[in-house]
Image (cartoon, rainbow, N blue to C red):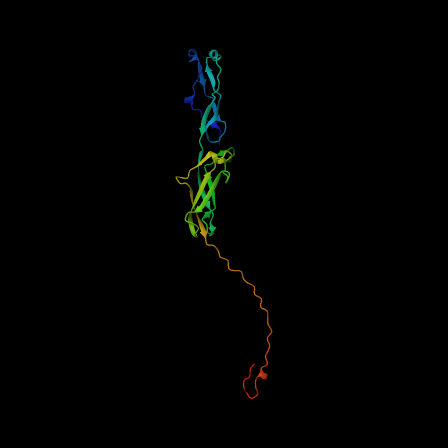
Length: 212
C-alpha cells in the first residue's frame, strides 16, 4: 500500500570520475531515497531515485556535477490473501446453488483505513452444494472465488492462497420445504322448505294399497 522502495547498495556505482580523482571523490548514500511512481503491483515499474551526493576534496568536487540515477525500474509483487466463506442455510428449492459471503484476511492499510474488496468490482463468487440439492445438515459447499485484475480494481494488487485447492470449503444446511395445506373452500347451503304429502286419498277404503 506504499510507494517506498529499498535501494540495494551493492548495485550503486559512481561513473565518470577521472582516474586521477578516484580517491578524492566518493558517493554519499546516507540521505539517498527511492520511491515507486505508483503503489500498485506490477513488473518493471518506474522508480524515482534522489538525494545522492558527492563527498571528498572540495577543490576536486567543484569539477563535478552529480546526476541522480534515471531509468530505474523494479517490481511490486501482489500480496497474498487467505479467505474464509460463510454460507447461508436454505429451504429445499430443488437446486444446488448456495449463497456465500467471503471474508479476506491480509488486506493492507492505506493511510488510516484497511483496503476492502467489493463483490462484482473486485471478485466473483460461485457457490453450490457439492452433493446436490437434497435436504441435509452440514452439507459440503464449494465456494469458488475469482479475483479480478481490471485496472480500476483493488484486487489487482492481491493473489488468493487457497491452500492447494481451487475453492474455499464450507458447510451449510438445506431444510425441508414446508407444504402449505390447500385453501379452504367456502360452501353455502341454502335452507330448503320441508312439508307433508297427504296420501290418504290414494288408499282405497277397503284396505287395498293404491298408487301414490
